[in-house]
Image 1 (cartoon, chains in turn red, purple):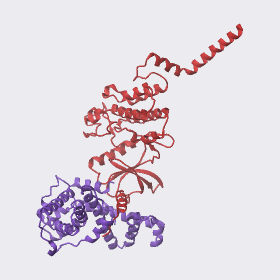
Image 2 (image 1 turned 180 degrees about the vertical axis):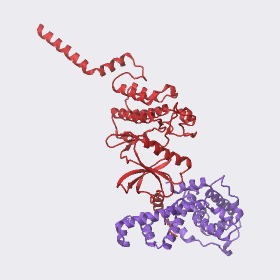
Image 3 (image 1 turned 120 degrees about the vertical axis):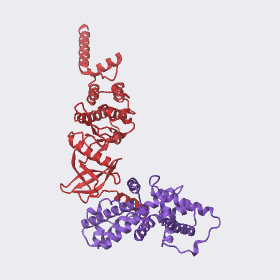
Image 4 (image 1 turned 90 degrees about the horizontal axis):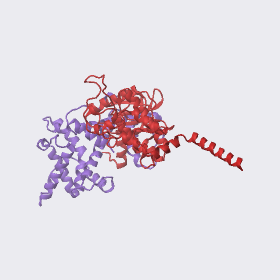
Length: 310
Length: 242
């Protein structure tokens, strides 16, 4: 009988874990990453001769619930055409009946790794704003992400921001839905501690709405501001987004994005009550150019006055 | 080797159920699978966890499987309580404890061993090989179980390839995926193509084919050596997760 060394065994474990794509148009290249539900592989689409990313349930993980979730994820992604959401190309099943879908290959860095390169405060705020855009777009189509966190955000080579991993996403029940509408009915707690809203960790689906995603974005903003000299209004925005009670958070992602825009425009933000000194400083900063011109004009007049008297 | 044959193995009689069977052939095949999958973990576990001397470990390993072949032993197994692998390890513990308690144990030298196992080879593995020795021996048992399942699957793939006239495909797999990872200058696809006088794309196709069959047989063995669907899925992750 063959005797396997540890090195050979590890190699064989790796290749044995790869899904059987022989019945598909895709050719396996390598593993890109693994999550709790599925693995993402770099594959070549033989028909179109291009590289794409293929997400498939992990071997042994194809429980009916997870199969449904992966298919739901593909459908939800396909319904969301937005520059901040990775497009789906194809769905199918492997020779072993494992469901998979392929999507655009995103070459970039995860947000948690991107920040270690030392990015500016303006870049941190821009990223948060772009996340808000993508998530607000999804909310407009009644889709909740429910697992927003830095590891689910990709920064592309040209600075594009992509919200990834919609595996926990579900349709949000609206007033138009009947009693069966919206929720996928699961009562299992899904999400990531630290970025998951309290009502979500409670497991009561009926209480989870778009404010749970507001909480997640707040968590990402807090992560981006950690260890920086962020201003009080900016920190207040993150704190309000992460308020324990949903009613105390921004009611929508759009309103959170609005406060970020106001901050960037040196306008007062709803999350922070500024002091008179802070208000004066902000006004000076905001109107720096006209104030500078006025001061320059007054100085010139003063100089002319002095010269005329001399 | 069609694509449909590589689907997940369908549920069929597990080893536990097959050994309880009244059909001698069914029982013998199940017993063979059980021995091939578990004899190395059992022997190494006895040697490393229980510090049993080589000759006694050989006897105890033989005795362990002889008892396993008795229906009563496996009838105690309850899939709702523990995985089959855990149950077997606890059986080994019990056997070793009894051995330890028996101060003057009858020498088994005169008894006829019913199975032929390569104990000399496994001792070499313990001395020179890659045995994973853990503090409590549990890790040894589990790690050697993974190794045993892979070695058994490889043997099945080898037999299948030979039967189907694809011995060269298996030879390439052996060179690239079994021996390859251990050598510093790993053989390339181009070198394999030259050696077997085929194109590089044929090399990659053959390798992909044998790898798929390896995966298929791994899953089939796991299906045979587990009882419930949940246990089967849990053991898949145990085998494949690193």
